[in-house]
Length: 116
Length: 114
Image (cartoon, one colour):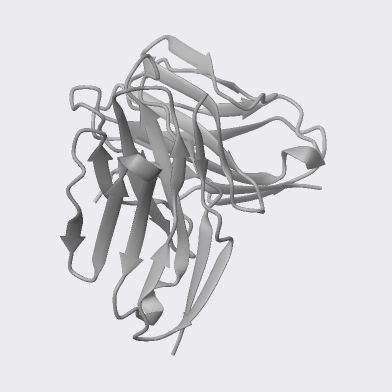
């Protein structure tokens, strides 16, 4: 069985602070894929990043960065110099590499509120 | 920008009514999904489809049914709505020709059953 845990239910920061959203996963698959999605107040989920289990290289995209560590089964997401527009619910998700047929297992989500 | 649409965006309906939530995508994706999102945010897969005439139940048991007669269309039906069906329903699709393609999500339908 697969499981994704986002231990932080809510995070509140002031604009320009850095913030890290934690994600820990469990899977028995040797090949798997990890995702982060953003859900703004409008409701749709917006894809942010995909990582496969063979690629532990960290990635940076503008103010966003991701730290993937297989040794601790974690895939954490950091927003540098947060902005009010970053306020949203963020989901970490896992897809197995076997017969999962593209199904995603989502974490519980973290509500991020950035105050001006 | 993903081309996946859901209608209606909001629906308030009385108990016992039959409802159909529409989902359409113009990307030609084979795989489509329905998720139910609790008020507490967690998303649960309730149905998925690999292609035309293929449908499977997801991880969370649901009284809803789905059909996939056309690639672009994946409607969800509740024969008799109940207050326990009140939730947000999100439709998604992904490209089966791309390894581990991300899922593209529609804007969701927020259903309230009185």
